[in-house]
Structures are given as structure tokens and as C-alpha cells.
Length: 508
Image (cartoon, rainbow, N blue to C red):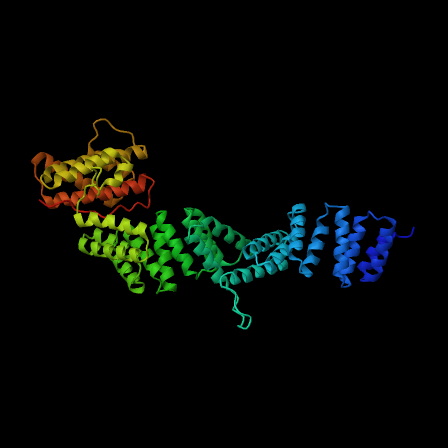
């Protein structure tokens, strides 16, 4: 049985005899004028012989006979692009995509057409979709081609058109593209930045910089664990990435891992001793660990490297206040407020002014009647916050009663700890016995146990002998505050709590 003219045309086209293929398909069309596939095949042959108009004519005839064939529209779109019929080409490729939304070459062609129409942002989206589909098909070469197109378009979108007489500009680097994505996140579009980074990782899963950027964006979105996972991956790929170390250190501090945070920031500063942000990060770690002297040294180094750094001034002010160097704390907050004003960051400017009022007034009372030194306890136990506030109110005129109230504070706090850890109450158990029981079962560290015992012993002495002085009362107010912070971190689920610095109550 001899092959049909249609089959003969296919074979001749396969062998490169396009003129013979055209003749065979023409005979097939004479025999069956409704054979859409024959028009399509002859159109392909016409295009191969340099006759694009004949190709468009045949593709149109094929579409008229079968409007559900994606490849008919794609082929006509391709030729119309060659003929510079951009609007017609765009209509055809959109029709092809409607018929098959997973055909990567159609999105690539659509991007090329949109590029010709100077629809840059839309073209970028089309090339991205094509790259994603090529990636899923493990077609790395075409995926890279689309990536290069995107880089060209992103670069050309940054600057106004230049005269053709000017020399060509340099291609945008990967670092510049990632910087733009981070700027998008800084401007508030974290979701858009994350989407671009997700796509970039699919294109190149071995680029540490992309994981680092995605970790930073996830951190901004509040996804701490996801951010740490990305930064871990970045450091697996490049252990010398100081930016990843710095950001992982900041995140570790937020989840209460002070030692891990300190190790990361030490390593980051070894790699880049001129990084002001790493000094600020390490200073924050020192502050969280109660090492305010070293924190002040690091904040000062950061300010020397980058004087226009209001966050560093605020952090140093906090550390100065913990050291009771109130005038220095006020000065740093004033500088921070001025710098926020210069940057027109009005939100942080007004916050800084509010904190300045508190420092300048040196008043420990808030508008709610709760001591600002113990206000953080309100969210965990209102009775505990109330007792501490009363103790502070008695400080100025009655230090003995202040010490007695501090003893009551210690008793309440020890009972709360016992409830949290499931130690059942024992009838008629004294505070001394309860403290020893908590210490012996490992729930009290040595320093915490000593503060509890000191508050108990001096409070008893104040109650029995009615003796006490302001110096001792102030010391015990600080002890109570430290115990409250420890309780919130250990049992309150807030490992990163850092209340405002202690402000001594008014002297008599």
C-alpha cells in the first residue's frame, strides 16, 4: 500500500526536502480541503523555504478548520513576530496559552513579543513563567535563556532610554538584582520579594546569596524558624558569608539563644571588622546577657564606623540607662531623635521623644498607675506587678515597708514558679523551705536562689526589727526586677523580653 500524499509530505519534510513536502501537502489538500493538519504542515514547510506570508496563510486556514489546536496559534504567532505584526502575534500566543497553560515555549514567545511592544514588566512575568516550566521539565538550557532575558529587562527598566550613539551599558549583576529585591521588602512588599526569591532558588539552588536574602525577608515577615533554616543553608554553601552570620546571630538572640548569637556575631566580625551592623548586633547580645559595659563598647564602635545610625544610639542609650548613666542615655536618645527627624522617619521619631520624656522626668510611674520598672509583669501576673509597684511607692518615705513588700513579692513569685513546675504545695511550708526545695530540684540557678534568699532574709528583718535604709531598699527593688525578668524568660514564654532600663524612684 503506497503512502498517502500527507504521509509523503511528512517524510519529505523530515528529510529536509521542503519543496517536495509543499507539493505533497498541496495534493493532500486537493483531496481533502478540510484537513487542517495538512495546511499546518505546509505552512511549516513554507516558513522553512523563506516564505513567511505563505506560512501565515496556511496557518490561518488550519485555524479556520480546527480552532482547538494550540500549535496552530503558536506557529502563526511565531511568524507574525517575524513579520513585525506584534499585536497579531500577541493575540495568537495568548490563544495558544489558553489552550495549553503548561507549554513553556508559548510563554517564552509571549515574553519576546511583549518585549518588542516595550511591555517590560509583563514580559518579565512571561519569561519567569517560561523559566519555571522549563525548570520543571529539567530543560536547563532554555531556563537559562529566559533568566538572561529577565536580567536584561530588569536592567533596562532601571534607566531611561539612551541615545543609540552612547556605548552599551553593563549587564546588571546578580548582587544588584538581589539588592533590588531586598529594597522591595524594605518598602513593605515582602510577599512580592519572597515570591521572586522562591523562583530564583528554583533556577539556582546552589547560590548562598539567594538563601541569605530569603532568610532576611522571612525574618521581616516574622518567620524566625524559616529564616534561620535559609541562613543555615546559605552558610552550608558559603561558610564565609558574614551577612548570613550577622542575621542568623540577630535571630538567635530573638529566640533566646544568646550563646549561639554571640558565636555568630563574633565570626561575622572576624570576617568583616568594619561592619557596623554586626557591632550593633553583638552589643544587643551583650545587653541581653547583662554585660552592659561590653555592649556600650560595641555600640560605640558601630557609631564610629557609621555615625548616622540612630538605632545604635538607641541601643547604647538603653545600655547606659542600665548602668544608671541617665544623662548619657538622654543625650543618645536626643541624637537618635534628631537623626530620625533628618530621615523623616516620623514613627520612630515620636517613639524616641516619648522615651525621652520618661528619662528626663526620672519618674517610675506610668499613666496606668503601674511602675514602669515592673509594668512588664502585668501581662504575666497582675498581683505580682501590683505588689512590686506598692513596694516602689513606699521607697521614698518608708524604706522599711518597701523591704517588707519585697519579701511579699518574693513569696508570690516563688509560689508562681512552684505552680509552673508542678511542685505540689506542702501545708505550713515556710518560704525558706520552698526556696530550698525549688533550688534542690534544679529549678533555681545559684544567682536566682541567692537573690530570693536575700529578699526573704532582709524582708524578715524589716518586719521583725523594723529596720531598713534606702540603699538596701533600692538594691532589693533591682533584685525584684531581675527576678521578674528571669521568671518571664524562663516560665512566661518570652525568652527575648528586654524591659526598659531600671529608673530609680525619687530620693527622699
